[in-house]
Length: 287
Length: 158
Ligand SMILES: Cc1cc2nc3c(=O)[nH]c(=O)nc-3n(C[C@H](O)[C@H](O)[C@H](O)COP(=O)(O)OP(=O)(O)OC[C@H]3O[C@@H](n4cnc5c(N)ncnc54)[C@H](O)[C@@H]3O)c2cc1C
Ligand code: FES
Ligand code: FES
Image (cartoon, rainbow over all chains, first blue to last red):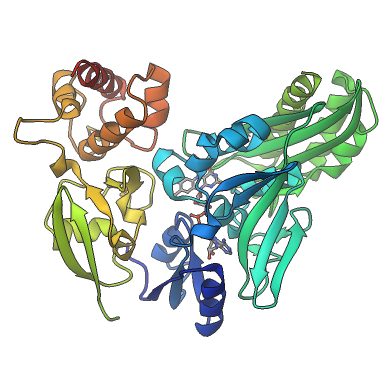
């Protein structure tokens, strides 16, 4: 399986990549290549030009700026796992990256590629929703900041504009009283999720001040289970409330039936992943 | 499409090749450079038979373009043994019967070689996690895990 013919260019800077996207019609950026190249081999994608952004140093690395962690779009999954900043300040991202694919794929696959690719099975979009992340995008018109909430519009469909490139992801550091939870059900190591659920909860004493429950692979794109969040927000969360929220998670699911399961099974598994993540997040928030 | 010139270091030797942009690294290694130790199993980034060491990291060479290896340091299974004989991971796979048909073995060996540098003294669970990008249809993995454990011991004693 070999992709159709294409021209190959290396971009040397973010601006160079944007210029090249403009100069070559229907061109595509090549990041880790672990979603794009498989699609090109299967001829689901036949871009006439690839612009390789692997050599752009400004797109790599993780840094702390006050209460915000800035993650370059070309940071690989293994770099997320190994990052001391993330281990200390954003355990959710480390846990999620550990459950993406396998060691070889994690050496190439990037967080930016995962966020913008648009496969509902990608894990990072839901993680970005749960963390209330901000996407930094740069295009011919300059830079803009876009909340993750609102970016994901459908399968292979998001708010990335023409000739725009995702530069950086910004996530808040975990604070006292905040807890992260992550659960992903997969058939085997290296598989995409049957269902996954990252959860971030913020406690005020015993009361849930805010909660974000996101879901992977149970809708055309990553979603927040807002009705489930509404059940829990402002309350002291107990088992009965978690069951009510789980019912709302099931109602929010709209999965495609495939080899990973039918609609009912996937929706119920999403609810179970959410239950586990809520409990784990609460435990972490209570310290 | 015009071919592009790439050069890289492969198993300690400088090599030059002319490649089409769409050419996958595994094809350059096997067909142009005639090193057929690196296998093609699934062609879809799942099985790990095509694993090579690229700039000190394990990658699946069916999902990297040859043009992307320009200037890189590459190691394939052929680069493991040296004048003193087989590498410790190769010896351990023989001793522990870490292979049956042998199809997955080159990928297992070059991955184990890198994994044991990332984690020289792994637990069994860490071995299973670290080797999880390599599939084997024959052994049931038990002896592969044992082989990696044995290689870890040998390398630590050396
Ligand atoms: C065996 C296997 C298992 C996998 N399992 C999982 C899994 O469990 N969970 C999961 O989430 N993913 C999984 N993946 C997908 C993998 O992690 C991909 O790496 C990821 O989806 C895409 O990231 P990439 O860097 O490889 O992007 P690429 O494949 O290079 O690009 C994907 C798309 O994003 C665009 N793009 C990339 N970077 C940018 C940018 N900075 N700005 C604008 N556009 C950009 C590209 O043009 C392309 O359209 C798996 C892949 C394989 C092969
Ligand atoms: S042939 Fe490359 S992963 Fe299977
Ligand atoms: S020994 Fe046959 S596939 Fe592993």
